[in-house]
Image 1 (cartoon, rainbow, N blue to C red):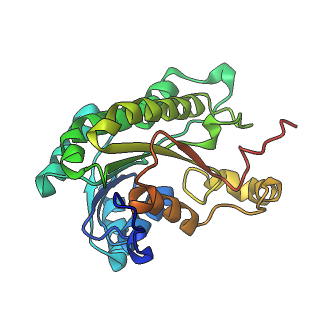
Image 2 (image 1 turned 90 degrees about the vertical axis):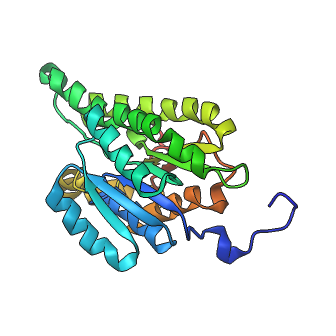
Length: 267
């Protein structure tokens, strides 16, 4: 705290009274994060393209707290604005924005199509920028010098080391998102908004399902911690960044990967 006193431990990770938006929050990493924020006391809006997925995720997450689902196709600029208007109408302020919605496209270099760039870059890179742009007034309204509003972008370890899969547009878009995180952190810090990125390694998700089904044991065996990511690993880093515990952290890229990318030997 500003006067030198320690924040009580019970308050350090408490998100009671906070209002959060988690995009791509209906499954995988997004749902892990939404659950963590709910359990810490936040009121959460989740968004995804499919209405039925939104309804099901809202049902499953409702046991953990106050959650609302709002369908939107965030690869489109007008849909990002529509979601932002809905969020602002509900409160006028937004304490936590988690840009998690994303897409991947794997195809060999020789046949990698144009649409694989547009579809992936629009959702992975443009949508986070569009949402920060549209929600900045609400983030400014929520943030203070002592307790800034938070933006958490979900990047990837594919932007830190070179994966074996031919995911050209995915890796490039996530590397660009990491740099966008740093640029926005510098600009928005004086406006009482922190901006950080989480770079997940292998976690169970729809995007990783095929890879983990065939290579999960091999990937886990090569990780320094000898396992894949678990739900609490992702919930924990999100709550840290969103809470008082992470109030003095901005412009960082935090790998949550069991050491896979950060200790890679290149062999």
